[in-house]
Image (cartoon, rainbow, N blue to C red; front, side):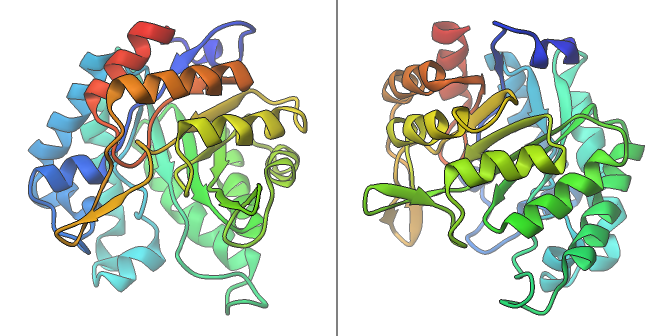
Length: 290
């Protein structure tokens, strides 16, 4: 895929779907880091990503959502940061076979910006920059920042990636709240769209959170009114149900795609899936909306 098509008027593009829940189907345990499988079970990560490419995904995310120093420190493997991110980029590039763009995936640190936590935005910037530099050096085409809740942290991530000279897509995660939507830190869709654009994101959007495709369409519609940037959306496969201690997402590929029609109509031009989505969800999405 030509990266310029992400910004061309009237063109629709497709991201991949979930990684974590797919690895859980292959034996990843609740609480384990999916990123560690880049080192211990790389063939499983490769199989998942190849399945998404075969399904028609045009943008493949590296398995590095939790690959920043703070997340790896909590797992006791911060000394393997370079190795975790390098292998993730190599695996995604192998899976893409030149048919899909490889996006360096950046997720939140799990910590809070002052005054709610002990970290400054500048410290977050340095943490994200460290991860982004590794991914950039091993051949990603762009960055996709996901599931942000705090505007300051999101802006730090965008700046860290943007300064490396790559296109940047950035999204925040919303929950329904009494007829409204906001992130865990109180950011509403319009505020997110404006803030991410001001930070320098080339695409802005929403992913994950407590919304399925139908509610995601409402979130996207509100973001569309507040930004000139192209929009992307990656909802979960519905809302999770707890089964045997695990979050299970029940929305079928058919129901997911019907909801995604509304997301596209609301203004999203780049579509994908988050938790619970599978290669079959993406295959049907590409077939019906591509």
